[in-house]
Image (cartoon, rainbow over all chains, first blue to last red; front, side):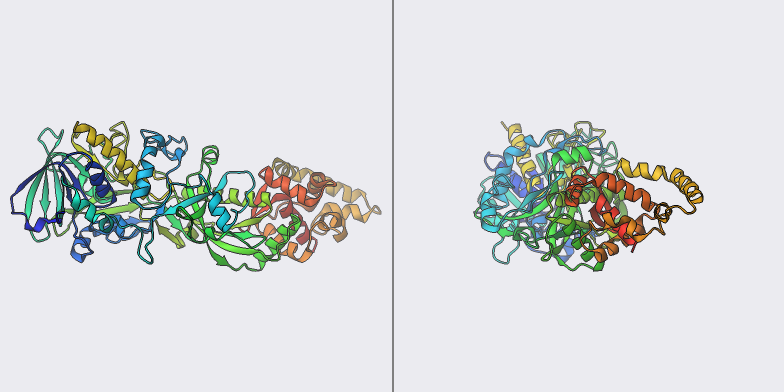
Amino acid sequence: MSAFSDARAVPAGSILETDIAIIGGGPAGITLALALAEKPIRVLILESGGTSFDDKTQALYDGTQTGVRYTPLNATRQRYLGGSTNHWGGWCRPLDVSDFETRSWVPHSGWPFARSEIEPHFARAQALVEAGGFNYGANTQPWRDQYGEPIALGAGGVYTSWFEFSKMRGSVLPTNFGERYADDLKRLPHLKLMLHANVTNIALAQDAGSVDHLDIATLTGRKFKVKAKHVVLATGGIENARILLASNSVTKQGVGNGYDLVGRYFMDNPIPRQTAKLVVFGGALAPYYTDSRQGADAIFRATFAPSEDYKRKSNVMGSLTTVENPVDLDALGQAAVATTAAALGVDADGAKAYSLGCGMELKPDPDRRFTLTNKRDALGMPRLSLHMTIHDEDFALYRETMKELGRQLLASRVGMIHLDRNSRESWLETLDWGNHHVGTTRMHNDPKQGVVDANSRVHGVGNLFVAGTSVFPTCGASNPTLNLIALTLRLAGHLKGLFR
Amino acid sequence: MSNDWKGAVARRPLLAALGALVGIGAVGGTTYGIFSLLGPHAHKGAYQDLISLLPDRDDATVLGRAVLAGDTTSRMPEVAHNLRRKIGQRPLASVLSEDVAQGRVVETAGWVLPETLARLCELATRTA
């Protein structure tokens, strides 16, 4: 077992050579390295941080923003080994089939392939995040036997779907890839992992058709180069865009940015709180709606989701609505519940109300974007500015789904819904973000519509690939980690094929 | 909103004119009919058959105020006519189930309600 190396100890001016250089030691980079280990391919992971949080390294993320309030850029990721898994919540759910489709009501939608392309990789992705059995509603009988039946909904567009959770170890956070896989990485004979190694420039060959080398810098002032047969950029949905835009020594507009797409189409899942009240006439609600529960095969939690058919027919976006906590009703609410239940012929003496929250899917918006600024970080790299948007239509489409849930509750005569938010201001009041960074190097077969092709290769640059959520053309409502890992495993297969 | 209700609103000017004519010509006639057509000042008993379908008049009135806050243009005779035609002799619960099955729900101060129930509550409030 070999220890990780430290870029601060590399002699200045060195040129290191490898088969594949992976920029970033987060879930995508670590997954890729583990998967490539099956072949005798020399892999070098270049991680900006160390093995724990460091203020100066984290400050490299500082940036500015305009538009709708968003998480400060230096707080939305943690810049050390493990990346986003240093502070993720462990929520897992595969993207829906329709998330991959070209949806007529969603401009710029459509992946270059169907979900079936990454489905073979879900089982291994699930194992890597240690989320137990890959179930997600395929067999809920044991969960229902243990905790009771899901709430009955009348026929319609919303159904009870399921999250599974990356393994919790007591009070410790879900699987942290940096800690969990450190020893595995150290055991790999062909892998080197270098800490404190910041890539400041992807230097293209003069014809701009390939990467010649990577410029590396440390916060201690050390500089050297890495030459690799293939380079994989895996620094997250924000930093991927910054490095490509800032690498402008050969192509002024940056690498892969011939059509001004890098940094655009940024997406995240808005998480508005207290979006609605769910009233259950009988009061009882299975406990897996309000909190995660331990099942025999996985930790799981129920969520209300629009069905594939409903999304297609009603032209709504994806959303995942969770039941949060019990709430009281005002006089009007009590009257509404009493009157409605009685009129439906149902007893509501024990009725209870619960607050709902959700994660929404945004439509891709080219103006929701990152751009470089004139400000520089400690390494001399330009800092980013984010222009964040969310449109009234995004809220309205989610509201339609909630109204449909309300209709289905009335149809089954088990409850009803109150929609709490009816203005942009009220939506924004409680708006939080999932910190899921999607879309800034979007995938499309046409270089005019995407930064990378279906194999995650940057259009026009033969040996440069991008891994992670930045390649998602649309974000869906599902939490991205499980999906980005499955997609990275697919990329690993492609890269291995290049070394046959 | 269903087409029935849209139709009721579209006929409003015609019904108003008709109401005025009947009112003028019905001196000595039945006050029941006049009050029924004038709507807002109607005899409270005129809609008792409908309002009695509601389980609790007080609660229904609270909810009805919210309905009226969102839609103050519909006239009671039209509302009642449509409700009677829709409900007939059926149990209210069946009518409401049919409403929601066919997507006829309305939003009242944020509450998603079967359309028929909202209209009954409106009627209860107007005649309270």
